[in-house]
Length: 428
Ligand SMILES: *Cc1c(COP(=O)(O)O)cnc(C)c1O
Image (cartoon, rainbow, N blue to C red; front, top):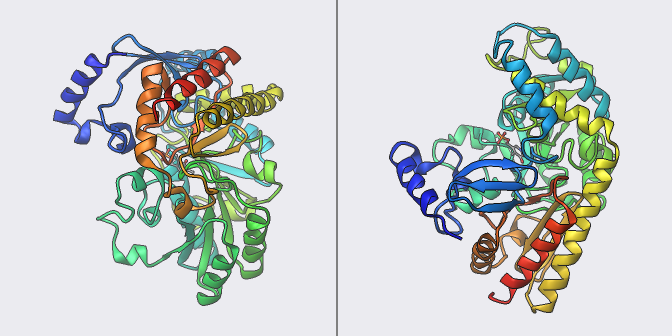
């Protein structure tokens, strides 16, 4: 496949946009080469500026769980646009999507909409600090919670790919309130809590980690964290920006049967428009302005186009209960196929998967945390990535990303992909 026009467009972009992109991982820095410029997308396919068709395993990093240009979302957005695109005043639509989200997700009474996952996590932590009147938080190495200052401490994928886990611009004062723990290491969490008695406001965690590849919680880990939080007056924040409305209707809380105190959303909840949200039980959410003292706001929060897209997406997920089963089956089929061809070609690898989140690591040992994820062979990954691209299969341009499976994929697409992986494996 040729990428002439994409390369030209990237050169133009580099002149006026830092690094040519508006989000760093898009720049292909960790795999080499230049990014592909998309012209349009439909269902499971991307169509680029050179006329290539690619089967898409990123799906805008998660939101397009039902495929690109999903008809109900497109219709909802175009209809709303004609009626005005922003008012900065309440609309009935906001109440409708809030009620729907509250009905789908366990253990939440109220939800506030924002414009990104970053905003959701940032606001959730402020709320937790205000509510508990404590300053410190615990986050896990390799977990990503957006790019706000408190979280840019060993933050997985993007940050990790660029070898700048601690970004300049984050002050020492901010960094000192973020305690870093090892994912899947309960004793580590326990000792941090013991060393900082009555100081920790919240523990924020991706209940299934997805920003160092897909890393499932080992049995007892989240249950133990939940218990430690309850015993020590710490709020447990589940960052479900990736897992929410993906792993189940009610996200990881439902799948794992563990209740968090505050839950963050993004990606799927916006149906492909810029939306984030955070939610909790009433007592906590009432602590937010204008009811309570913790300030949080947004000129475009609850934007009618974004809410229309999100509502159409959530309604589709809510009414077709079989979607999550189909996603599970398709991803399991893909996983079995990848196992088959990588084994047949004597590749050293590990595959992690939970539901429609899956990742392939080029290392033999289990990937359970940031350290083990970082052991994967990046040179092999680069060849794998570019090989698949030539075959017409697009996976994330970084070894530390989850593949996001969409319901728009057919079994023919999955067979095509498995065959492509077989072809590429022979060259590794
Ligand atoms: C993507 C992501 C975020 C950040 O969301 P943005 O919309 O990119 O700001 C936060 N947490 C998790 C788990 C994510 O995957």
